[in-house]
Image (cartoon, rainbow, N blue to C red; front, side, top):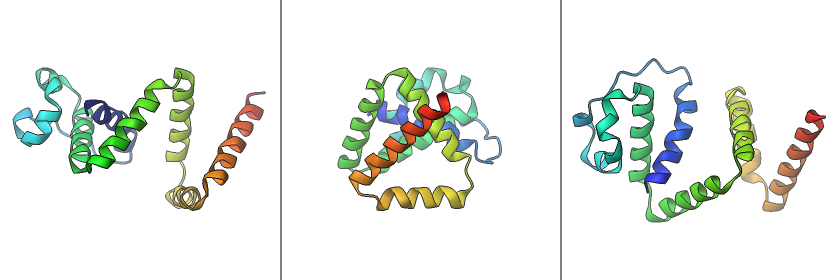
Length: 139
């Protein structure tokens, strides 16, 4: 469970960089009890965490608590898959995510829609083409 929260929190800093004003720190005591249970390992260092990190962890805990058991299971599986990836592949995925985040909202929406509508075979083809483009750029 904690692993999924950490995965969500790891991705959250890129979300928090989207024109949000700097967040103020949050006192441990003001965090709802269910979130405190999930974030308990951070209690001793909570006050020394940067406010954006606190916010990311709280969002991740909140998101986790709102998930169904099936969604939690799926999140655990995705996180385990992520952990098994070689560091180079994780770095590439992070780069692609950052590039996607830098696109205008309209273009991001179009790409999401295209991916959602694609069949599994079409998705494989899209990924293969992306890999080929990446290889060509590296030459």
